Image 1 (cartoon, rainbow, N blue to C red):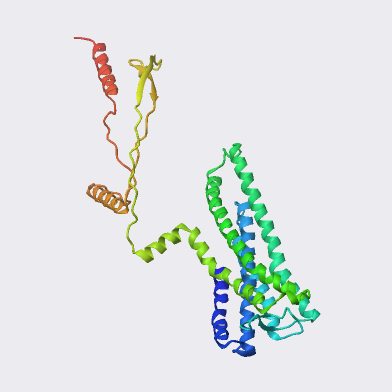
Image 2: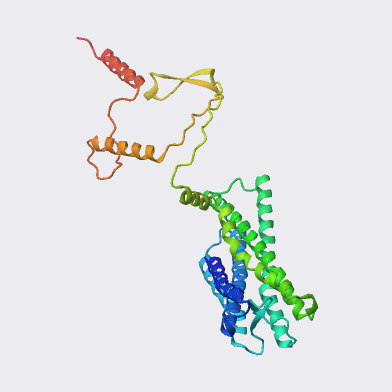
Length: 373
């Protein structure tokens, strides 16, 4: 969400740029130039600081998956620091202080810092802004993703060596969630690479200007990097779209209607023959009087290649229809409980023919023991 806001701020510069282009110069004047430069500095610094915060958050989530006590507080703190950081550096030239102001650049259709000046304070501020918005985020992101990769490699090796066999259900659930976090981390990493690829040429031009290499900078050589750095905001949504399966499915439904996707026919699998063999039969008798009249026959069997039945996927309509049938069957029962599912009542009949035979033999023995008249 925060990254989308910074991308939208960058898009607000387009009307200013188009109007100046058609007018062949800074037609909006000094105020228009200040607004254009402020939006560019705020969106650029806000984007890289948001990506830095996300990389740090991915590091904590993947490195310490079970320690999420302060995750919400950490997120709010990162958002606050991100916007304060971006507003501070982008608003200094807005007030035309001794550290410079926003001036037209390139073909005079866009505005930025005055990196061609000879003023030492302005040069110092531009170098400080470069350090704060390029060097420091690069170091933090590198630290985060190096540790993320090390954590992933360590967990992969641990699984191969069987170190996580006795994990609890909570650990298994967290491991599944961790896979999603790793996938999201590498999506963010691709966006970070895109940002640095887009903004590094422009940062190089600014460094050449403050270092006194003005002869290497022409209006066209400064204009192309200034336009190229704005492509990062345009390409971010496409990266999310190409990497998110649910987004692609919803987009397909939006463009081509809510038609059901064609499912591939399920090929029947070749069933293996099963075999059941009797290995040994043993008769056991019990010393207890309760079972004295009966022996138990124990049979050991061997089962080979018994294949479980496959369950086909049911459609949502079939599941709803089956649920309605179950409800109707339950309504037909004369059940006096208030809940949908109640405790069943079992019959008092004997559950085994063997028990019935035992009862009859006991009655016969009692009759035989009675004295005859």
